[in-house]
Image (cartoon, rainbow, N blue to C red; front, side, top):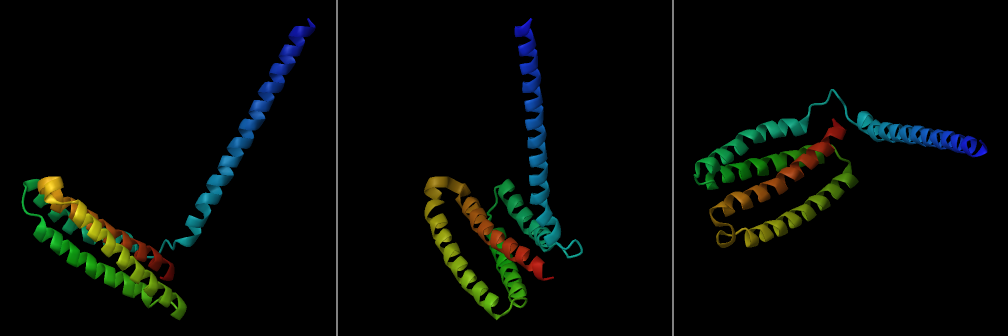
Length: 168
């Protein structure tokens, strides 16, 4: 009889220990979740325009033209060139809008950052041009290399627009 009593007691202690551990774990997860989402709720101004979404909406027409040309087997050079001009204008617009919001020191840091980003972009473009070639990728080389190039610039624009959201 003593052996069964000890096993039941041990089982209850083990179950209680597991339940306590589970409660602590769930509490910890809840706290981490709340702390993780708290800064996001306090940093964004819900009344501010969504600059990134607005940019994405403007980009959609250019991206659709590229996709349409690629889907038809047409030459994508023209639509890609239009898209690059659009992205260059958007990059300059986002950079200028952020630049005028910054104090002298931060503007200087942004200028330095942008110069380094341009050097990075140019280096990436060189890599893309050397790797995505007709002999390696056939007819799709223009579309692939064009999309990689555009994604670099698009990411930078979105980054600058996200920074800009803090100054509205």
